Every structure is written in C-alpha cells, then in structure tokens.
Amino acid sequence: MNLPLLDETTPFSCGSCGACCDQPWRTMIEADKARALDAHDFGAYPQLSGKRFYRPAADGRAGFFDLAKGEGTRCLFLDHDGLCIIHKELGPDAKPAMCRQFPFLPSRTWTDDRVSVNYGCPSAQASRGAALADQRGQIEASTPRSQRPHKGAGVNVRLDRTRTIRHSEYESLMERCMAIFGAAESGSVWSRFAKVLDSLDSWPADGAADDDRKASADEVIAPANRSALPMPSRLLFASTLYPDTLPSEPTGKVGLVKRLMLLPRLMSLGQLTGVYASRICGRNIDVDAVLRHEVRPDLAAGATALLLRYFRSRFWQRMIVGTRLPVVAGVHQHILDFGAIVFLSRAQAAHRNEAVIDESSVRRALTGVEFHLANQARVHEQTLKGWFISNLCNLELARSSLRLMALRTAGEAAAAASFSS
Image (cartoon, rainbow, N blue to C red):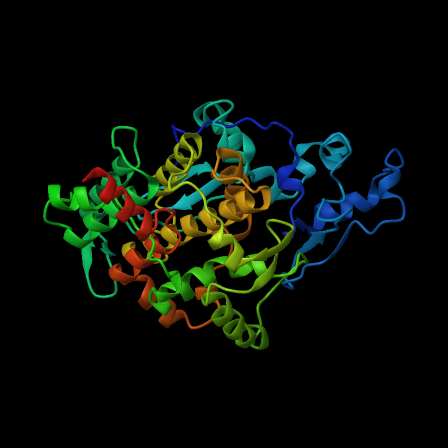
C-alpha cells in the first residue's frame, strides 16, 4: 500500500470546540465498539443514566449502529467540558472510526491517495495547528485507504460528456486551477472561477486564458432578476442546497418514494423564492428576503482568503474533479458549493442586518456546507442522474451558476461604469 500524499498547506490540531460532535448527521459506530459501551460503567456521567447508547443503523448496514443523540443535535457522549466521554473513559481507539478520522479527509486520484482536512472544522478554517506531515502516523492509523490498485497515469480523463484528455494534461489543468486560486493571482473568488472556466473552454491550447478573457473574468455580474437565469442552473443550485431543507433527524437510504418527492421540492427551491426551515442556520430562511438584502459587492478580505484556501485544497485533492464526475462537472459542482456558501452567508448577514459578508458569516456557512452538502451524497446520485450530470458538464450553464449568487449586480456595474466615465 502506498503512503498517502499529505496536504502541505493546511495544518490542523484539535481545539476541542465540539463542532463536529454537535451536528444532525449520523455517527456510525462499529458493532464491537457499541457493545463495549454497554459493558462499561458510566456511573460518573449522570447524563447517560437510563439512556440507550445506540440504535440500529438507519441505512441498515450490517455490523454498525448509530450513536444516540443527547440534547438537540449533540452526540450523547459529548461531555459538558466539550470532550468525548468515550475517549476519556475507554481511550481513543474505542471511538467510532469516523470520529477518529475527522477532520482528515482522504481522496483517491488516478495515481495516489491524498489527505487534506474537512473545512467544516474551525481549526482547519483558521489554519491552526501542526503540519499534517508531522501527524502522518495518526493519519495512517485512522484513515483507511482502498486496497484496489490505482488506474495509473495511462488513463484518459473525461473532460466533459464527449471529450477526454490525457492524464498528463489533466494534471497540468489541475495545477493551473490551483495557481488561479493561489496568492500570486488576483481577483475575487468569482473572477477566479471564471478564469478556471475559461481554461476549461480553451484547453488544451495553452492551459491559460488569453488577455481578453482575463480581463472579462474580473467582473462576474448577477442579473437584475436572478430567476431569468436558465432553469437548469437554478435546479442545480437547488439540488446542492436541498439537504439544508431536510429535517434534522437521522436519515438512511433514499428509497423510491423519497426520490420521487425530491422533484417538487427541487422545482420550488429552483424558483429562488419561498421560505424553508434551514438545518444549517437553525431557523426559517426567506429566500426572497435574503436575495433582496443589500450587501457590499465584495466579500471581506478574510472571507475571501479562507475560500481561496478551501478551493485550492479541493483542487489539490482532486475532489470530485476527474474522479466520480468529468472535470467540467466537478468544477461546476465546486461553483454550486460556492454559491451555497454565499447564499447562507448572505442569510446570516440579513439576519444580523449587516451590509458586509464577513469572515465569521463565511466560516459558519462553510461549516454547514462541508458537513451537510459538500461531503455527503449528492442529489444527482439519487435521482435523474443522467440529466444532472449532463447539465453539470455544460460550460455555459456553469457560467450561469457562477452568476447566480454573485454579489455584484448589473445595476451596480452600470453605476460604476458611469462614474468612471
């Protein structure tokens, strides 16, 4: 088994904040570890008295149970001091494997295994802690890797539905994407994604956008009426945000009935209107009010810096891009995730009646998107898979998706041009 490549740009050390232990997701525990809890005396913890420690796995998976919740969405074993009771009483090896692994996030590329971090973790967001290279032993012990051989550098990588590129071209393209999101480049997150789309459009001519395209990529403008953007872009955004509309309760397999029920809710959310109960924000969100709330057309500097690190890490990991999806579809999904982060950040600004989307709002939104949207099963994996992937592979729709949640509007751009002239 090859050793994994470790992200050199993202340090991590646990700050015991408990954020990962207070989420509505299921925490699966292996059957032998669950039974070890039954055999242990937790008499020093009255909050556990008379409680069931686990229940059958919601997805019916053999050999696993789901840990019980305590108050709200807190894990039953999250103590008042923010520490794990299982860890304190039985040691780290007694914890569920998914808890031991977090926030180390593995990915499998055509040629190697890579490990970065889940940016839902506040310590990861703050780039706080030790280098991952200094934690190799812990990472290798807690992060399982597939025993299947890699496909190798001789494989052709799907660029979109019809085009393929050589693996060497794919690697060059990913390095180009990383450079676009690096410190040497300038521009907003929107303009950088626009440059990535330009590179995909012109690839493999020289892997870079020409001067005219670079200039045009500086401005990504939302239309005065966002609902005028193509319905497929709005439905793709709705499918990305959809899990935020679900109740905060354990979920397992999505059966046929649930898959059929997805469509009316997706169509409603795709209209960019109405009210839904947000599991990420913990309150009702009025979509119309969020999009009407006026904010400055640029993210705060700290928020931009955080998102640049986040997406650069994802391109380094080759997350989605070129693995489960064609490259264009993967980049498009990154853009949709970005749109969800901006929307939820704007919802937070509206709730606070603030005119600036600051770093704290983006941190909270990024935590929600990482935990509940970006690292979970996608809607396109559950229903209408062919339709969703076909539209994810459409570069022009990707440009529309980028405009969908842009903060700079056509009216502001016209006013700025008039002022400068």
